[in-house]
Image 1 (cartoon, helix red, strand yellow):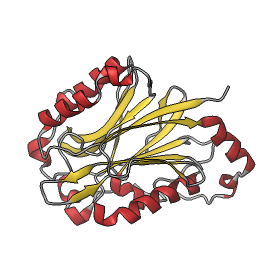
Image 2: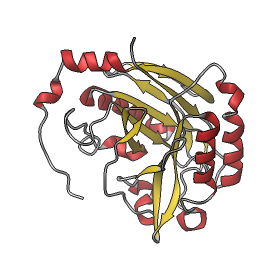
Image 3: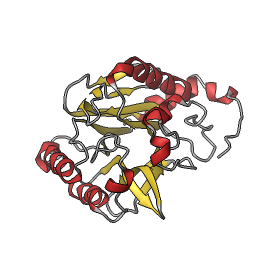
Length: 267
């Protein structure tokens, strides 16, 4: 019997800079009865899913004990699965765009966005993350990334299967503008091909408080760069089962990773 990893992507508009309203919205969207016939291993939410992509870091930042993270914890228990998205977090006086993963009966794990989008002055309002993370969900290894990280293939490179940090799935949670949707789709496919992994990109829809338009295009891309789930601009939930045995077989038949270049990233 093949091994599968079931993922649910959540594509939605966001209420600008309103944490409580967004939590209420996602709480209703992820009602337990909607998963009666679907039991995902992971539910993935967009970048800054409780505020939108805002530079009001000091005004909107939460701690890891506040409302957003507490909701993620509670929802993971209620739905008996992992759930993740990014939020504005203050930690030891620094502000981060932080991807937080909650799992039932397990400690929280997180990744801080490495590449800050200077064209929106994100680098003036947030601190950059300094380390990779490889998270594990039910034995499947996942590399979390956030939006602008997608443009930097050295940072997102998959180590060899025997190396620390090797992953089978890479995720990108985003607030990626509609005017650059062509870049989004092509880069997601490139990351899947070069890293021989599944890639999941989750983006928002709607118009934010700065007048920036988002068209969604949340997708799942397989290890050969084929889009196997496409949410287009439709709000809602997308479900897909990822065949992990097919991934392993492909890597065995086409082991390009054996010829990859070695390099070191300075942090």
